[in-house]
Length: 329
Image 1 (cartoon, helix red, strand yellow):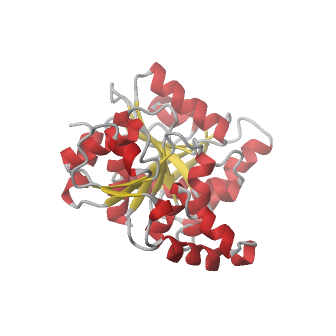
Image 2 (cartoon, one colour):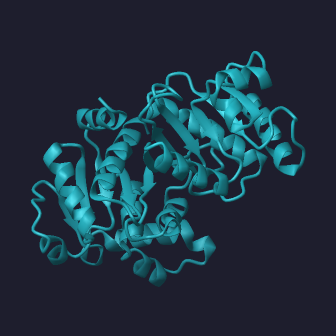
């Protein structure tokens, strides 16, 4: 059974309410029908009822809401106004904003009318995350929201039975040392909660291993590694490590002798978004890995972002993963 199959089974065991703001989009409607048929989660579709019905899918059991006509619209607008009035929000603007499906879906989580949200099939990452950061914000004590991909590599040569976490691949463009440390800690938690990695081994990646290279980028990764050790002393973390030192035991033990991580890493923290995004796409395409995500980390309630090129099955998978996150929230 693949990791994704296990995630779906876990989602079914304790069904959560997942809101899909892009409810009138064809792939989303088709995914909703599958989610309902397989019993993976309870589905809330946002959008025009007639447009949703026009696709002809069996949506028995779904909750369909048009935010523009919702009875709770004014209540939601009042809450947004109170949350954002110090930032210049007006009652009129709040009412207009709440008619946007993504803001409405996010407020549903704030009001405990939904447990998680998946969007991004036709919206940018910024459009998906902005409402989340404004309304539900980050978990207590978390200063940096981030993302990761759960990678499942067919030949199982690396990670835990082929499963690894790659971060950050979608949100933080040039994280500083403090942000990198937060990404590493959040990614280790995702490894436990979602990827079934009981013992995360976190490699802080660089073009240098243990001082073989010099410069600000190396210093940043080294500082981040020390911060992780201070903030989460229970974690197995090592850095800075080159990718081969992180993944290949012979190389890792040569370059970082005695390390519990070098050569055995199952969580890879990249020094920048550029490196992380390129890295996961290369592994996905060249190694045939399944890339699940991006999975958002650090938010008070689970919100996950799709690629605009996503398939119906991608939406189904991310909804299942979001449901499992909601179980652990």
